[in-house]
Amino acid sequence: MTVRIVKRDENNNVIHCINSRGMEEWKKYDERNNCIYHKSFWGAEFWAEYDESNNLVYWRKYNGDEYWKEYDKNNNMIHFRFSDGYETWYKYDDGGIQIDITEQKLEEIEFLRRGFIPRFELMEL
Image 1 (spheres, rainbow, N blue to C red):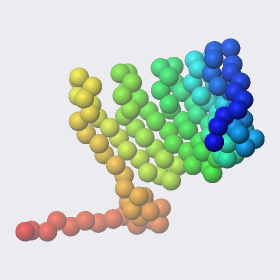
Image 2: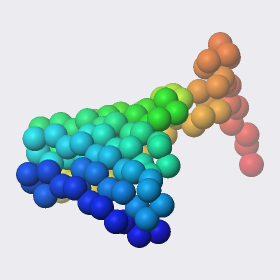
Image 3: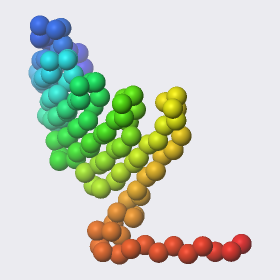
């Protein structure tokens, strides 16, 4: 598939494409040239938001899926949350090296949604 027509904004960002089949793609950008809206050739739409450091902090997909990200003062991602409840936390040492990842598993989330509290017992080997 070949792109036939491309339009750009004043910052040279691609804002509109038409491919050889006549399918269109659209994009919008914020004042820092981050893509905040994208409508693909297939019609799927995506929206995004960025913080003052240009870190992606929010993303929404055409089907309603969303995710959020949080960052520390060094722009390291410290928290990721998906709209289905899945979450991940990240820890870094003073040098910015990732030292720990903690995830809330989807099975645990489903237990919590149903009002169950999972109980785990340690077994002696």
